[in-house]
Length: 574
Ligand code: F6P
Image (cartoon, rainbow, N blue to C red):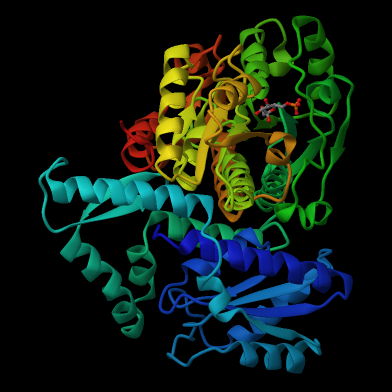
């Protein structure tokens, strides 16, 4: 993952979302050209995150006759209920003979073969400009920190390394080999070694290419005689990406031979029998929508409700349950696991997929929804900082996160906050006194703006209001203070490209694991997520060991090591 790619994806997805609404209302076809030179990353990822129908990119050049296959695929999509068609063309796309494929050629083909009045949008250099995304800010700051440490001799003493990102972790790679690998891709494509070109892009690129092919196919490969019935339920607080996850669950479920069943309104809905079959086209457009169309509740059932929950599972012949949600979803799954000896209907495979803006779930270093919330916070803070540009002002901004400081920590790095107050560390009066000292000192030396970020759970008594009043009372007229509690804007909004992609990938893996369990006749209750760059599945029996139940967060939190990055880069020492 190179710095800048995520911001470019933001630009592309904003454009695709905007085009989708006009395309859908006019039942139209759009052909969108994206940048990337010889690399199809932007094309492939935007095709998945934008819910597109067809993608042409350099590493996977289509064989002769692809035009007919593309038209048949778009036609099948329309017949299955799609309101629009969207084709993504990478600027370096070519067919297997090496003949370049242009957006205009695709448009002409659609007009000739389907009679479609398609429109072309070439996104061009807007993709390389604009505000960097939250990920590109915290990731580049961390990368710069590690690189500087290595050069200064504080880190591991390697020379000839390149620091890169694999998922959410820094990877040190041999420079010569990495450059050779990257440069090798166009050579492999030229030599028609397409398989190796795809391999050279890495495992998750290949996984995503296969996923896109599956998602864009609007029909099951083969309908089994006795399709398994897959329940899909949300629980916990709202997280952007719930709809993306539900869409992936329904479409991948159908394609893999399941009958998807949507449970409305979380566990109370399951208790009350609110279950309906969902078809491929029932989830059209959900990938890009915030909210949770299925409905959700925070409610964790108690033992008295398990009889009715079991009855719903029996009556609807639910063979497996996909639980898409946050902390309370995991608590509910744990209860079902504990009680399954008393309720045989609960002896079906279940899988929790992590969705929470708080990023406070075990078994995954990142929860779906946190990246979107982070982008909302960073955008809000940019504006807040802008408002204070002409005056001497200290801002105290409060983020959500309950007892997990992830959003506060990462937004501090991404916005250059000089202070960050985390639930993991608490707040002391002595620390606030130091902060006041620093505020006076630096404003009297000419500072214009100060930014502190406080996670909502940092201290129950030293609230954002309390801290702001202390800073204000002690200002000696050197600066004034404003507080901003960002509130529920953090839960809303459309999911970021990163969250859409993570949702799609994790749901795909969840369904695969469920399938394997069904085939093996096993019925574990599990959760899955990203661990050190890989997707891992954990048995729910590990839950109590992995979490601090009282604090409401995992015991191990990888991102806490970034505390020192903020301290080195943004926080003053005096
Ligand atoms: O758990 C997600 C979360 O957004 C927390 O960060 C926040 O404390 C809480 O939900 C807000 O809850 P509600 O939407 O019920 O006000």
